[in-house]
Length: 398
Image: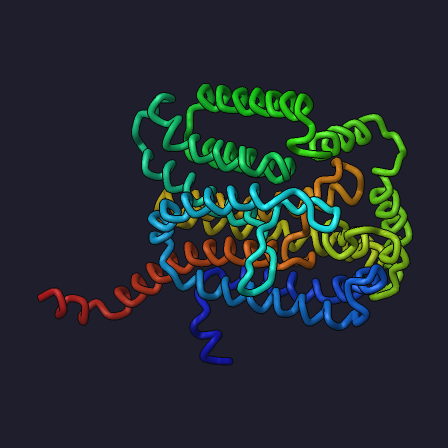
């Protein structure tokens, strides 16, 4: 164990925050598992605890392995992964729209291991690395819109177009994060305005086509529009069932909560272990537990910004921000949905909600951030050695 800690590099506070989030996740996930057992997924609630543990274990293994890779290698890897992501997204679209009556076009089944994988989450991480690579490559150069459209925005819009039919919220989040990243990278605002306008126009055209040919994408566009309309009008109907149960859970929690495992609404709230786990956390741990969780995410955001600021290259700065900001932004969206500040989106709470793909891709992104910070540590250690042993360095130079 001591040897393992010696091999851990990168920002120690990020490691600590991620570990705290992972450890904290076990209690609410295990508590909400009773609802999953009740609806017939399994009669043994402990199996969900073991499953969540295995997801986190594999996630931390991914994070450890990725953080040992020098972050400069991710430049080339992003170029290799972009075509692979295209293929995976196309396969996901082609596999069908329903499994057992539920929309499953967000996942692709891996026959060898008998599990499903949400390809859009991998596409999000790969795309952010690709955009960071491109923006760092043109650093200090005069940017023209014509030259940047195909190499920068071509892959972005192709990936978003493949994700949009089945997952509007993920598409919107990825697009927003790409816009923020290129803005931070110095992309001209006038060009960015054209891109945003083009994106909105493309969305409107997609909705019109989907309305004209409803059999091509059953229920998805109507679902998005009904959620937004119900949220804006404050109407109560069947679609608001989740929000109503989430608000009851939050109101029941009070300041201190009803106690670990004592949630009542977990038995009635769909997706209580994933999309709406924040409501269960507040019910069981109160506002204190909710604020503790928010502080952890804000602390994580602060450390990500510190890592980016201390990086010695533009690619390192943009890479840390590109893969790190979506994690915190997704957490804020999940919390906002639970307290009805945002329409229902289906976004999980990073490192807290159950679900393998979300945990693994979050750990992948954090591993990349740790890789950026570990490079800074190596430079600092080298500088310290040079200060401590000037005679040895002089003799080596001679």
